[in-house]
Amino acid sequence: MRLLSDGSAGWEAGLCYVLFVAAFAMDLSIMSLVYLASMLLVPLLVQQPARLYWKAMLVYTEVGVAVS
Image 1 (cartoon, rainbow, N blue to C red):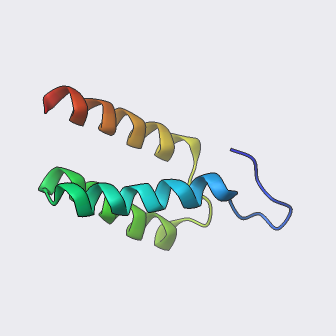
Image 2 (cartoon, rainbow, N blue to C red; image 1 turned 60 degrees about the horizontal axis):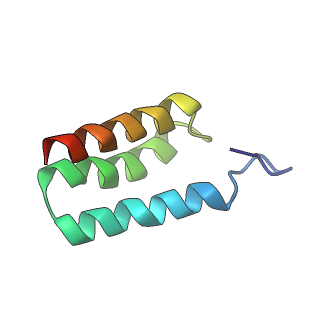
């Protein structure tokens, strides 16, 4: 993910956040609640989510698809 000159994330992070909310709104399950909770809690804890956060969300999505 490319950082802009002011240190904020690019449009990719914004798109991911919108998709997290859409996934929760369409599914309304406890498993999709993790997306919404992470979207709200991570910005409170860190200014810029690390690669580890995005990789963890990717693995969580893959596991969720495999389980369902």
